Length: 295
View 1 (cartoon, rainbow, N blue to C red):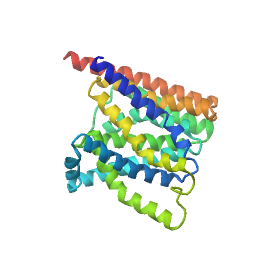
View 2: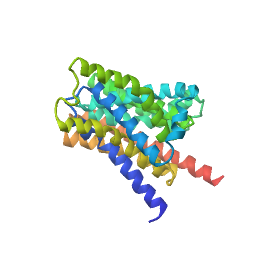
View 3: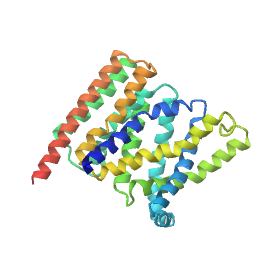
View 4: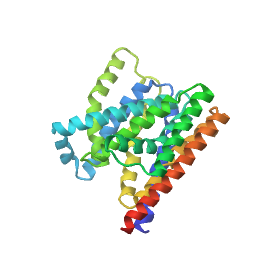
């Protein structure tokens, strides 16, 4: 099998797993979202220890935990991904899967805005049009439904800023998540101990199924990241850029058809505007990549 084919299949697996995450978190609906996130952090950290040990990178990774500059930098990214995880899980378990889908559709467009504001990057005409369409889509929700999709907006902002921080960080995806889960791990462990102390913990109290799902939230977090890292080394950036929309598309289908979340005409207009914006964004990215390769 060609390396590009392996990369494509790995990317497909990663985004498909991320796409079906709502089903996983729905099984944990009886558990407090905070407790789910803190278990996710702890079990992810432990599972990443195992992965790094197998790859002979554990000792090197622990040296990063002694570097104050790295810890300070990853403290911010930890806050971004931690808040993103919490809001996502809370939204899924309060029947807002469609809003999470909308948020991750918007994230790439927010990346462009972040680049413009922080890095003073020039916005092409295509990306400007795409951003305007996103604004119109949000206004349609506010005016038509008298409701700002704040879940979508916050998910898009936290995920975009997290991606920006990680892109400019020194560590790879696995080692970076290792540091982040370490940073978040101590308060997470203290919170879980506190819940047990006041008899509010769901772990080891509700059912073995809940316990197993909480434990497996670690591998469930790390495995898609591992397959994505494998794909990223073997695929062109533009291919990965297009594939990233698979996850919110799967989530959209799950929310609309599996869990029967309300999907009014106003909702559909918003999604259609976002989809048009994404098509423009993808075409614009392709043109930029093509011109760069030609020079």
